[in-house]
Image (tube, one colour):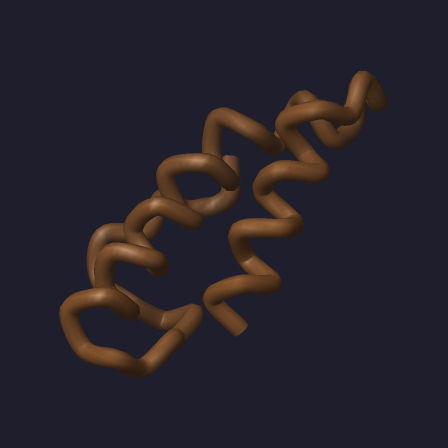
Length: 55
């Protein structure tokens, strides 16, 4: 799951689609938060503290 999150993040960063670019300001920090939590706990979760809400 963590590897997939990194691949998806990379795909978003190189994509020029305007809709996908619009979600980057929330997706990038949320991905980093989830990956840090994974490295700390060894469990990849989508409900970790510190995630940015949908705007």
